[in-house]
Amino acid sequence: MKKIIKEDVINMSYKDITNLILEREKRGINTLELFTEIVNLLELPAVTIENKIGDYYTSLTTDKRFILVDGLWDLRKRHTSDKLIVDSMEDDDISETPEEDGTVDEDYEDEYDDGDVDREEDYEETNTDDDLADLVVLDEEDLN
Image (cartoon, rainbow, N blue to C red; front, side):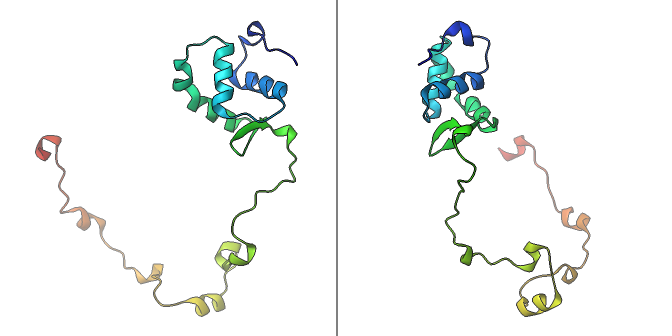
């Protein structure tokens, strides 16, 4: 197994180091374990983990080399694209309305119009200046 040496990675990005670690380990690893190994490898202060792990996680999510599977980061190339994420809802439970599929016909609107839905033509234009006439702006001093 190839050992990662500090001199080899000192000028590499965290993502590139992550790539090396995942290639070496040949298994998925959680975010904390990965970042802790990077911090230890680069001999950074332990507080770096707490201060930068969020940024590190974000950088992994935006890098196409990595994939998060069941809370573990792994190399995308190890996972086939024919694996699909299955929604918990069955296809039978999803009913697509004509508006959602891009088609609308009058029969649909008449059939499903329950009379409770407000339509654009039901609204009269109102003067918004009148709505704001009673608006009072307070300073912080006035709140105390």
